[in-house]
Image 1 (cartoon, rainbow, N blue to C red):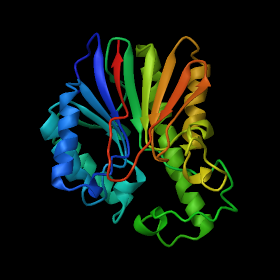
Image 2 (cartoon, rainbow, N blue to C red):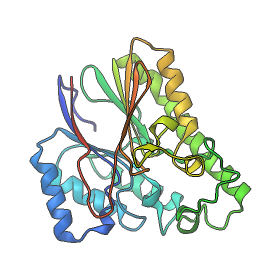
Image 3 (cartoon, rainbow, N blue to C red):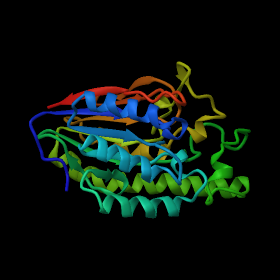
Length: 273
């Protein structure tokens, strides 16, 4: 079941809330701040918890807020576990809930009569920046089963596969979205463009960019909007912990949300027609 299509929608956008860094009182205070907005829905762009906690946090949010929660997963959500294992657990969770919607397994979701939502977790796919010469070593490479112990070539092959998987999802859902709505909102964890990969007020440098951008998804989004100049797209992402707004095309804007461990915050409250 999805949110009833309405004339207007008030939606809270969150990203990189990392609830594993909070105690129960802090989580309760954060949830109250969300409830006080009296929104029609919540959008979460990944990094909710870790492998053993992400389902618990999502369940806690849905019970406390009692509104639809649309989410994607981030790399931290797989820490101390596996991509396959977390995906299986999240699939089971959303099948038991009417208010939790994992966009990586959803089609285009109508939010209002003119706005719809699509999304996917995404992944830093190694295609932008200088993967070959980068000395960046993310915790992903130790704490996620499918990435641990891989040689550099094997790691690149795996992350490009994950990026391609995300791109294929968008290829499958965007035609319906663009046919049914004037405005498409895209929720994804990893910035899909170099120009959306913000950190400390500037774009990520070539060493970090391979892990902080998903070129495969960006190519699909940009092509779709070039082919539909009469439509518009808003992309909401996180991952880099840096704030930024970038106009990729006249009809394609990205917002990248900042984050600080232990201090989850509402990025923006949207009101869409």
